[in-house]
Image (cartoon, rainbow, N blue to C red):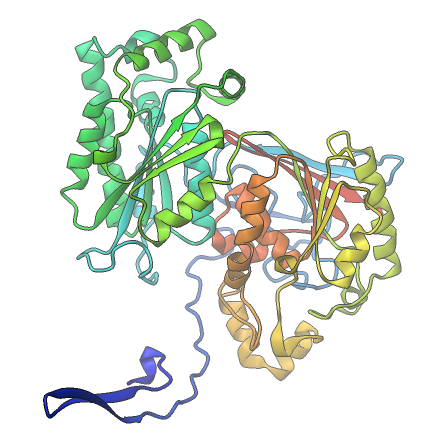
Length: 549
């Protein structure tokens, strides 16, 4: 067995007949051998390059990558030290804007929204197929059915009336799958319609008795399906079709199109909602954020047209999950395979109750002062002052009542000490929230790593996302161990404050802001800064508060 296969050894067995009885003789096994570290492939794009991106500079003339949609979340690539380096973020790294100082020692530095993720947008963008070339990326073998000619690919189709949570579910699932490194894209039928006919159509456009309008909508569906299949053919792994899809004719058209492709499976997700309170909440979200919303009476007429021919998905249509009243109950049919099962587990934890999540790193530690990584050091005097300010800040936040508040920390000293004075209803220490394990580099500075382990230092510089410290972890390892935290965060209906570490918070922040994995190791999560994210149906709002210690 070759070393390229990564095998450590092999056993050889021979079957022989002996008097009509079959016996197996173990002849021997190959010796194990040492597998050396392989350097990851270099990133192909320069800092700040790419369509829609750009650069901005702080007062110290450092260059930061800036994500489209005015996100200030991406910090210096080669500036301040990484996982537990010194101060890894200034006011400029947090966006370069400073607000008025308050009596509690706070500085409200940022307030912006993210209406769409990076992989949700008009499918008519002329370059999206070419811009998502997946050449050179490793092929996954754990998707669905590896025996198919093209490998397993999944098309998720959401079903339901307007204001029933379809788009919310589609975007949540897409964000989760991208975060765990599945190439996923949402194809929103409303975007296709808006691109072709404008943002606002009268309710009559959705009248199934009008043959002309019905034909127009079927043409839009065909276009979205072609783009979805094209995306999967070009390296995508999961495509999500976001539309009503309430009629048998539309679902039959979807199945017939997918039958032309070998190894492409469909998972139907139907959102059924009869709870007036949930519907009212969804309509309010649409009224606030959706360009498709015209007026209440027009919206009700549109829903009435959809109801005329609404047929719920049935068992003979294949794999499906029916979500009732935004997660109150789930009904499943023919769910098989690793990825569909994973998606269903995620759906079981979703709800639509709005609640904020607050992230903050521990206060400055002794290792931070000396520029050392790893370890389990205590807080410095500055770190202890931050712990006092953090407790005061949370006490004064109207959205964080002590009788409802959940506080989660890692099991490390500096995180526990930072959260020790916060009054809350529930306090939980998570091993999953511990800082990245740096293995043999524990207790060293980056200069010492460069001098003592030059090959490791270079390998980390080449691919910080996938680089794994000797006997330690990579960022991809952190994302894997944080899945349980994400499931619990999605399940929570009360506000949560998380006190953890830079690498861990980068991964959690990227999940909520739907940022690509390649950006994760460079996101700015400064010391002594509280980040508030509020998930919404059509995006995520964020505020940052800088503590003046």
